[in-house]
Image 1 (cartoon, helix red, strand yellow):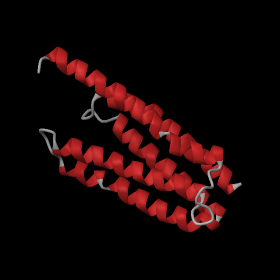
Image 2: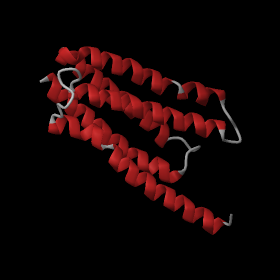
Image 3: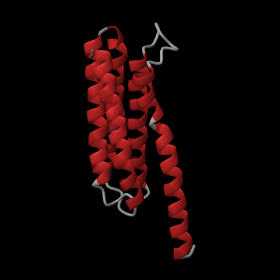
Length: 158
């Protein structure tokens, strides 16, 4: 593949990931704004929001693990750290779902998820191992996801 073809392919990937990332914000922003109650009383909208946050943390941890594995310099510390986001997401999702009848607990879990996504975002944005377009994309996506979670915490916590 020539350099020109590589640049074109990277631009195409960045455009597709931007569109997919924007669509991926819907589950962060829609539940608290629209008060989606399709699954109540079994599952509150705040639980839907935090479960999605856990799934995204797992995805982002997987991106970092894959980046480490497929790099020329596979660092064990990156692989180990890449396991933290899914585990943190799992714990916060459990707290959020168990706390759906306790508004303060659900709100705290949503705020914890926002903090975890922000920490993952900082790690990604500051990593020279990731492509520049990916790092630039992570900042607005992380900010919007965190805003949605904070709104969710404010709404559910009263």
